[in-house]
Image 1 (cartoon, helix red, strand yellow):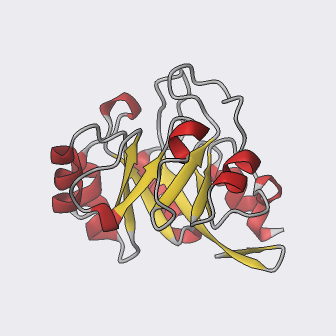
Image 2 (cartoon, rainbow, N blue to C red):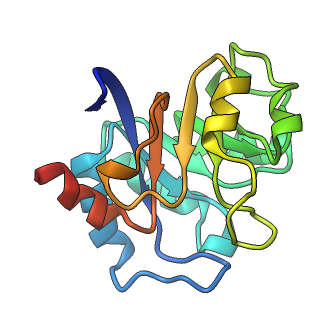
Length: 187
């Protein structure tokens, strides 16, 4: 956990080697896992092939850590949520819908503020600043999401250093800039 403005904020450290928007890391999955294991309260592992993820990565990570694991993917069906849990995930990111299985283990990522308004405040929510259709920034901001949603809210994407963590975040999900973020924690 990190402390931002006298508030403890969980760090979800993502083992991210690629994105479908053209980004790729110069580090291997194993190298990034070591950084994630060092700085994360929770370790995020991709399951979606668009990000070169797989359920096998969850199984591998489960053997390497006792920390909670988030299966990061869109998980468009409940079967995919089931597969993530069976592979060893403690938590599962679900984008754009509420699943009917393992709801207590799911972090929900709405695609818009309108969708966010429909999510019960008892759920854990991830507000991604990235538009998953284009790879660019959403026009809607974390601050707007925080105003709408009173429950647990995680800030995701475009977080390079601790200075990028927004007031009101209960957690941050750090991926492409994990190494820079880790260095910012040292200073």
